[in-house]
Amino acid sequence: MRPAAPFTRRSLVAGLVAAPAVLAFGRARAGGAYAFPLGVASGDPAPDGFVIWTRLAVDPFAADGQGGLSAPVPVRWEIAADEGFRRIVAAGEATAVAEEAHAVHVEAAGLRPGRPYWYRFTALGQQSPAGLSRTTPAPNAQADRLRLAVASCSHWERGYFTAYGHMADEGPDLTLFLGDYIYEYSLGPDRADQKVRAYGLEEATTLAGYRNRYALHRTDAHLQRLHAAAPCLAVWDDHEVQDDYSGIWSKVAATSPRDFLRRRAAAYQAFYEAMPIRRTRLSAAGEMPIYKQVRYGALAEFFMLDGRQYRSRQPCPGGPEGGKGRIVADGACPDRLDPSRTFLGFDQERWLYDGLARASAQWNILGQDLVMAGLRFARPGGDDTYWTDTWDGFPAARDRLTRALSQLKPRNPVVLSGDYHSFWTNDVKLDSRDPGSPTVATEFVGTSITSTGPSHEALSAVMPDNPQVKFFDSRSRGYMTLDITAAGIDARYQAISDVRDPKASVATLRRWAVENGKAGATPA
Ligand SMILES: [Fe+2]
Image (cartoon, rainbow, N blue to C red; front, side, top):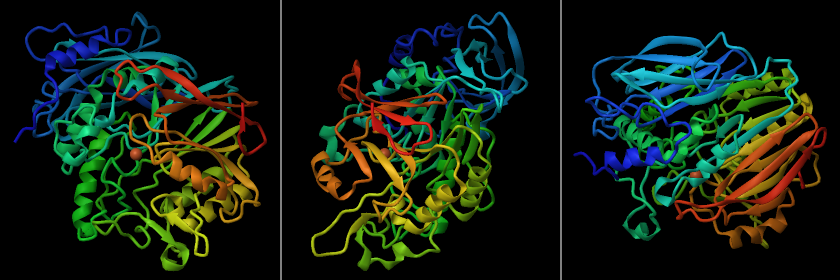
């Protein structure tokens, strides 16, 4: 049965009108429904091009996940050197097909490095909004400055995506999405009072369900504006599939990996269709590689990591359904310490260490989903305990990575993380058990766009046992902005005033500096 749509198409179009600069094109139409209600996006920039994306849909939440279309649709795309599209520098035709839910990914090439371009699509006699993208500087060019906007964890029901709108207003050169771009579940009746707006959709478990989840997010005017304002690099966390899943294991212990892989494959396919990423396909084993390395001139190298797909099972899993992460004591869960366990998967680990060994940029940025520096819950008279769904559930894998950073010595490693719905400023230590060991990387953890944070009081109480954490605050929703130059990074924690306010304002909660050559951030 078709779930009730959360708003009518008329209100949808009214929402689009609220974002004038980039959405001014193409709403006038003769006859059929508007074909671009999901906006446009770009991503995976390179010195000579980037991916431009749209997904055609005339009925974006159609129960079959097909957006109201079935036949192949020719789509013309154009890339211009100017905002007015007077100087078209690349153009072509793609075909949107039902097998990919009429998503269009064009991998543009042959462009000039280090400059802005504008792009748009035409299909079904209509024109899309225009988007702004950028090529990266030539590999060894000295880029003066890079502005990054970093997001994670946008739960539709928890509030308005005003943080995304403020990110767009900052004019970033590049946006990072570090996971939980969607949430697969809905707040149940017991938490109805926490709902700011309803999904109007059932829990996503099928390809149609995941497609419609992404479609709903993309009807949000703030998120459309952000995607149309800058290219992005996107990786996933758990909620793009299922809370706390780990590799091929569901959070529901009774679900076999074989059955879970079917759901995971549907979710991965929908992620590919929804995101402006380069062509990737599900393998016969149901894997879809999304980790990637992207260079931004001589200034920065990005290693975007996948901390979900290739992991070992949760150590000593628990929870009501038997397969979730939990807080475990060392002595009670020797499995956690097993050196054969992996977080990134051994192929991705090797790829990462090879990349770090060859890295020559000024800043080496690891964009990934989960807090790396670790958090120890000390218990008087008992074993220390750890929350297992983060890198803390995989300490041997973390040790391999921190040793690689220490031995390979890539310049200025900076880890950017999501998941925890709170701001953290951390020193990533060579040995996470020894606060006196060298700091091998600086870590910034962004808060959430909307998702509710953990208890500020409870977590603040354990921070004295965790000197590697220099700052923690879980009370604000928002994002991070990093201004990167050869000399240093100016990082801002941007907090919105109220997630329930559709006109929420933004303010800087804290500011951090990282100096070239010195691991660890200091207050700025
Ligand atoms: Fe999250």
